[in-house]
Length: 117
Ligand SMILES: [Zn+2]
Image (tube, rainbow, N blue to C red; front, side, top):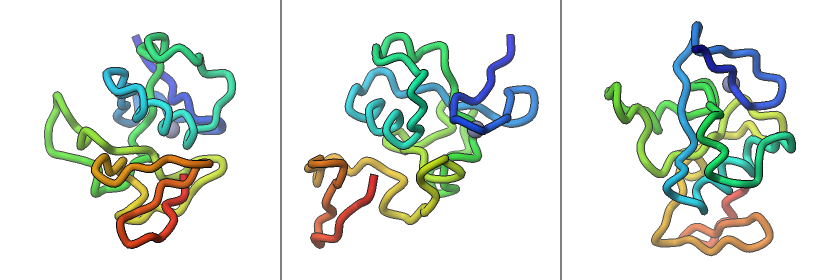
């Protein structure tokens, strides 16, 4: 069975590129993925996200690991080739738990710079 990437406008399929599952064990991380992907046809219920995939072109190279079972670093978030967001930096492609303060879509980093979601 093949998968199609759930990012709006992305035509990738699992036959062509690798696909990543939603981090359904971590609700907050899933919410950030949903916010970045911004596809309103996706389910709100995190458990239902099990059947959706995000293709590899939406992740910064710093998120990827050489592993077949866990090809993404656990706190990665999509940051590339998204309909409303395409400014990957080393700061905005990970959820940084020790510093998280999510308010109005802005997560502040330690040095006070806003971290655009
Ligand atoms: Zn895609």
